[in-house]
Image: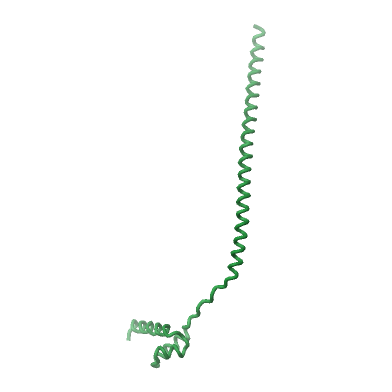
Length: 131
């Protein structure tokens, strides 16, 4: 019976050591699996980054080409309005003097349809104000 207590203690110690050894090995195996999985994922991400970088370089070249082409095109100048405030007041003055729209347009060098429009608008304004 004297030998049973040290043998039990030795057995419990041995079981504890074996359990620790099993846990150590399983943790090492799990770590190796995770490391392998993450290496694969990192490789995939690096491939994706390389592909995106190449696409970005292509887009950069396309943007530069587009900018070069855009600089070649010159937008057409905006059409100048033939009727500024000075010409408007001159047209109204000539109308009050009894000149016709054709003569006003010819005198001021503006299209007749603009003179017609100006005179119609002036008539509407005068009629809305009253006599």
